[in-house]
Length: 77
Image (cartoon, rainbow, N blue to C red; front, side):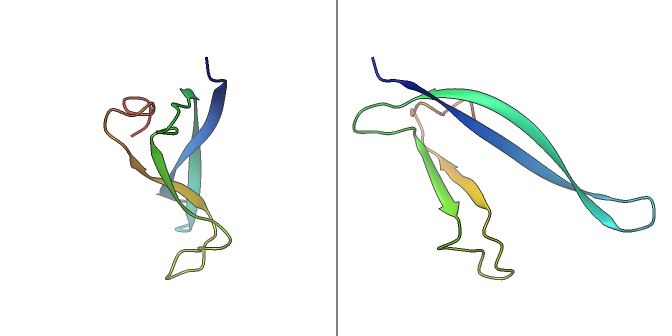
């Protein structure tokens, strides 16, 4: 049986602050994904230091796709 890996997933939401400023509130979700040989975790990851966001240069990493019938389907949106 392949080892289970934990993925720390967070989703951000921009909210207006009390003085009209903007702040980001992070919500954390913990899921356990099991890697399937030849298929992986069933997610596509984009971003990072080597591939920052094209408009603002943000190096954050994001899950850009959840593959159908993969180990992450139904666990990540």
